[in-house]
Length: 482
Image (cartoon, rainbow, N blue to C red; front, side, top):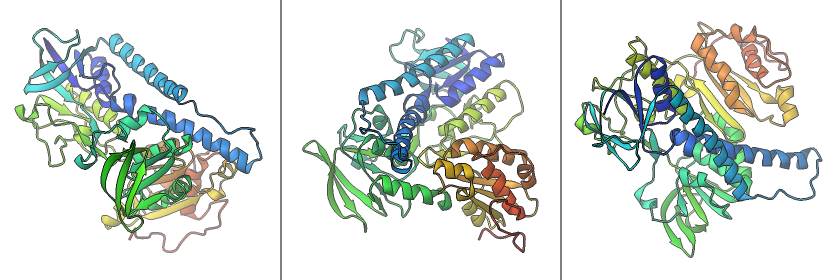
């Protein structure tokens, strides 16, 4: 069997590339080992985790109504874990079936198989699905590599017990353990800590570094750290190493080494969440001209082309940041390149969102990055305590921050922490991509009372004209990030 364009991987980047390539008139085939399209994001990542985070958020809001507003319930909520799991699975089923229908309508062929390269234009297909062509081989003119990533699991933690989970296992939601250890203070670990803590688990978070979310702006992280410490009843262990794990009496015994905790402790379940690694091994890439760097990422240019003229790469395998929305846009670039268009992935702002409570979101350059570059920037911060909407919602720990070029007054970065930060950051992404100046933000009328006003208000601070805060314009007008 021959296919002009093959997409290896049916995740957000893969199906976006396949669908656009088909829309451009190309004959496209997706090779996907999973029985359904959607990849990690939809099947066991972004979507199921956000569904469960919604449940956690509602539980937290009910608690706040009881404590802060005098809305009294006779009984505490009871968790029917089977129903919660079923509702989460229904969300996944709805979206995956939709993708299958879209593939059919676009005449995209889907082969359910594990694909690997025999050479630069031939793929070996393995599996028992009837969609695999006779002979188990597929030739192609071009392939878009979109195999994604998998959770990293150090050998020392891989003890053969289902009580030690990666993010995939945690999202299966087999039960609500009485005690749970989260190894890793990154965004996945903190999101899962939020879910399980609100479902009723006593959660402990351990992080080798000296702070949570080490790569994020710490002004944004501070309100979250306060909430995580409260949620975990102070059981956040920083600068602490997990030495070993062993299953003992249906529990996992963990050895800690650090100033905040030293010794052994047992937990019902452990989630290891220390990052992800790209899926580039076992694909036969050594049989092609594709180059893989020391971190396991495929080397490609801004048009997603690799060193092999027949193969392009997108998404997690193509480098950081490993985010679904970045993969989607790279997939569209790859499809347009194969359609003969002169395009490149040249985004100024790739938003990142941590869907904890409060949410954290940022885009563009950060203060730390500006400092590392020796670049002068203006940093304008609007505290949500001055926002009427934030006061009404009880989310006054939030803030909105603009990073501004003092010479051009263009907005070049933004950070937000607070309720709905992941939705609010989209305005900042658009402003940064369009090269907006601060006055473009402040001159645009924002609806009142909303949290979106804080983007306008933070811009007004730049001019010393914020209504709810008295903060006259600083002199001199620019400041160094250092």
